[in-house]
Structure formats: C-alpha cells, structure tokens
Amino acid sequence: MVKPTLNMRPTGWFQVAWSEEVPVGGVHRMTYFGHDLIAWRGVSGRVTIMEAYCEHLGAHLGYGGTVVERDGEDAIQCPFHGWQWNAAGRNVCIPYEDRPNIGKKIRTYPVREVNESIYLWHDASGEHREPYFDVPEIFTAWDDGRSADDYHRSYPGNVLFDPAQELHPQYVLENGVDFAHFKYVHQVPIIPQFTRQDFDQPLSYVDFTVAFEGEPGSIEEIDSGVEAINVGLGFAITKSHGMVDNRTMLAVTPVDDATCDVRFSVWIGNDPSGGGEADVEAAAKAARFVIEQVEADLVIWSHQKYADPAALSRGEYPGFTALRAWAQQFYPSNEQEKS
Ligand code: FES
Ligand SMILES: [Fe+2]
Image (spheres, rainbow, N blue to C red):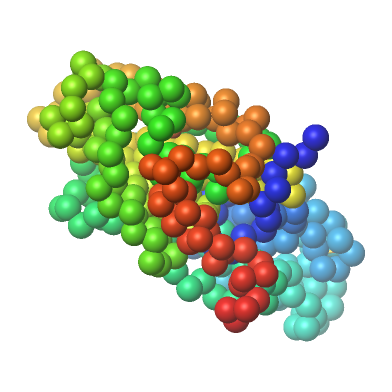
C-alpha cells in the first residue's frame, strides 16, 4: 500500500547527495521527484544537476557520460555520439558537425553545495522559478561565532542513509513540534518544553528544552536543549546546548510519489586542545547516540499513515497547527496562487 497522502512534489531545497559522492569528473545517477537525474562535477569543481537523458537520441548520461572541458568551460560528453552539453544544459558541440545545435537544452536545476552536501531546488509550480530562499550554512546559521573548524567532519562516518522509505518530509518536521513522543521514542526522563516556535518565513524556528538522561525532575531545572531551523520541507538543521556539542541535519527527499530517501548528518564538536584519535572515537560514539535517536523515529515514520485531521490534544494543538499551516506554502496548489 502506498501510504503518503501529502503531495510529494513540494517546492524547496532538498539534499540529493553528500559532496564526496561526486568527485571532480564524477557523474552520479539519481532519481528525485520522479525524474531521472545526474549530478556531475566539472573540472572547475562546480556541480551541475540535470535531467539524465541526452537531448539528441536519449542516451542516459549517467552510463558512460564523461566530464570534459570545452573552451575553458565545464561540459559533459554523451557516450552515444559524443555531443557535449555545458553546465547550463546547452549543446556546445556536435563532434561531426561544424556547429552545435544551440536550440537544444537539457533541463538543469539550481544547485547549492554547503554542509558537505549537495542540494537541488525543486519548484512545484513547474515554472522553473529561481529559489526564493537560501540554504543556511549549518555552522554559521546561529551566528554564535562557531565555524566548521570547531567540528569533526560528518561524512562518511557520522551519517545515516536510509533510501526508499515510505514517508513524507512533513512527517519528519512535525516531529519537531511533537513534545509527547520524546518520552516514548527517545526515552527522555521529562517531557520537553518549547521555548520558541516561529513559523513566519520559509525558514521556521523551533527551540526546546530537553535532556536525554538524568532523573525526572522539573523541566525548569534542565539547562540543555536543541534549536532547530526547518529549511522549507526538505531538511532541518539543529544545534544543541548543555549536552555533547552537536549539529545535525535531517533531510528527506522525495524519490517519486511514494518514497523518500532519508539522510542524516551529525557534526560533533571537537576537542579544542587536540585529542587526536581518542577525540575522533569519542565523536563517533556521540554521533552514534544521536543517529540512534533518528533511527527510533524512522521506525515510526516509515510505517505511519498521515492523519489529517489529527486527534490533537489541547497541548499539541498550537504547535501542530502552526507547522501544518506553514507547510501549506510549499505545496503545488498554494504555489500557483502565489506566483
Ligand atoms: S544520444 Fe547523446 S549524443 Fe547521441
Ligand atoms: Fe524524534
């Protein structure tokens, strides 16, 4: 049975790979939003995402396509008849004619590369508009003086990849306003308390007080917590305080109308005095704990059937209602009204 009932083609930024999966000269195959795509990294180091099929006779560029340089510009060469296409998707060479077919273009997508990750902009309206919000940098998004140098790298050790799950990006974001699940799914000693829920912009903000261990006491005695930024529906980034210093990114990207790929990346703060191997091991252990929390959520999400309307309790009502109202802006029918 196909479970997701929410539209699987919302607008926004979606993670489609980790950067290291696409080295210079690499051509990476993938399917997102029902489209077969390729991500390739040119000689310049820049990543291009385009439809996988050559506009000449339809070869799949991810099977034998090669990254080349054409007049100092990044290009990909088709394995079938050698036509070359640049980073804008334009045909720039037909090797057996004296000029390219300038009218021919392979559809490309806006790309961002940050947070050790590659993101694609998907436009639900189908009008290929430019992005109207940006991908935040996870280390500087909170303006707290931290940078990537303060953290261990995430990929490949401290990540989770769970492809083809029957869930929807919105389930995952609803988890951020769902205070009651923490006790049952994450075994926290005391129910967390929200200190901020701000759903005014395409980037929304949710902060809460939470502790993952200790004796149940009163929530006022807890001085640790998590701050989350929901970047549209595609992913959320978090930072922690008062516990192991970590930043995380949970990204859910629709593959087709039934399934999503789930990626979770964890950055653990490094020991400022060095610490070498022991510090790397401690970070891996801390990352494992954080990843296990998401694995516990995933068991629920991947078997959940979206409830709308949901039987919300009085305490749940404001958070869920605000999040669901905010989510509407990214779906196609509402998109069209806006444009
Ligand atoms: S199909 Fe690509 S060059 Fe012919
Ligand atoms: Fe959770």
